[in-house]
Amino acid sequence: MAFEQLNLLPEIGEFLKENSLKQPTEVQSKSIPPLLKGEDVSVLAQTGSGKTLAYTIPLFHRLKMNDDDIPMESQFGAPRGIILTPTRELNHQVFKVSKSVAHHAKLRVRTLVGGDKGKRSRRLNEEAFDILISSPGRLLSSLERKEISAVLLEMIIFDEADQLLDMGFSRELKKINELIAKQKIDFQVALFSATWPAQYQNFLADIFPSRQFKEVVCQGGVQLKRNIETYNIHCGVREKKNLLNAFLKEQGKGTGVVFVNRKEDVLKILEEVRKEFPRRKVNALHGGLSQGERKKAFEEFRNKGGILLASDIAARGLDIDSLGWVLNYDLPFEAVYYIHRCGRTGRAGKLGRVYNFVTAGDSKLMGRINEAILSQSSLALKPLDGPKGQSQKAPQKKTNKKKVTKKVAKKAARSKKAQSARRSATARVTKKTPRYKKKKKK
Image 1 (cartoon, rainbow, N blue to C red):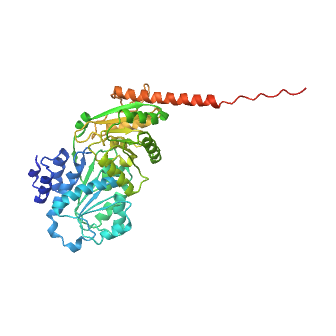
Image 2 (spheres, rainbow, N blue to C red; image 1 turned 180 degrees about the horizontal axis):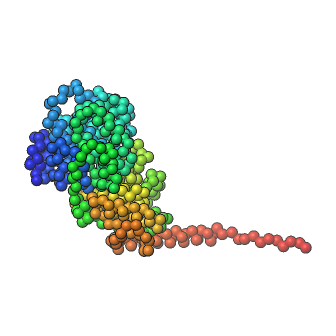
Image 3 (cartoon, rainbow, N blue to C red; image 1 turned 60 degrees about the horizontal axis):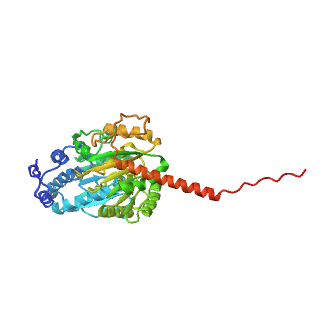
């Protein structure tokens, strides 16, 4: 199938021509036709497969078709299309793509996310626009305050729907749907997701009890199986620091992400890595940063590459084709985030690598992660394995280990031995001569 077979409006065709887009990707060829027909869809497709255009093209086509039927004065504060994203970073990326389509379609796009000042949403009430890209919490508060109206809504899209569920947005999403339903309007719903967790169908039934979704499943995992390699590096918790330095010297070349669970640890490791590797570009991304700081760090990493130290706030929405590797310094507490983290590399047909620091204390995490790997169909990842004899909850397969990985471990061991020798030498120098008690006079 070619894009020209979809009978899209000339304005959309101009966008495709300018960007040399002739053949749709699998997710686009499977999703665009039912969306153009007005069907509700639930789409499963791997990260980096072209999902954003899979919903923006039919969204812009539909809104442009009805553009002349709506008077300008009724569009103030009333978007006709809404795209919900879980993070600011993804919001920014979707906005960037949407603006490039809007340039040809002559439709107006606005954003609204958590962290924006109240004046921003109140100002939207005084603007005429067509599409709003927002976070669930910010949209809900704006609807409740009547700063935004859903009276003209034609389509609502949930991007990374599984993460919206994971991050606890269920309550907000249910309220949003209830507020929109009160308008008694006919609108279309589309959900795009990289994984379908076990509770995903319950989530759909709870939020949209009266809707029947057409399921669109894309077999993108086959390509990722050829392009992602997994390496488990077994170590002790105290060895991680030395292992990280050795890894960055030997294997962590080019552009990659180091995932750490706690933002406090991100800051500590950031200082140590910058000290150890003063010539390499190192940035950090975590929940403690302001919106401006996060945007600056992300843009610098996107444009200049290097090393990004990140908490799970960066596990989704990072779309960087040049990302060569991912290192899980800590295995994630939530198993589904392992899938999200690994999806950052091996994109656009390029070879990607995932490295895991695995400790003896990670046994329970590994079991949950392996269950998550086996229960999803979007990424063909190998299960984690532990030290010999360590029990696992899920079936185990051997993962590859390069000779260079052994070299990393040896370097870290030598570093540890040197530190131990220095501590012993210091102890000998500072050791005090014992005092002997004087004999008592008889």
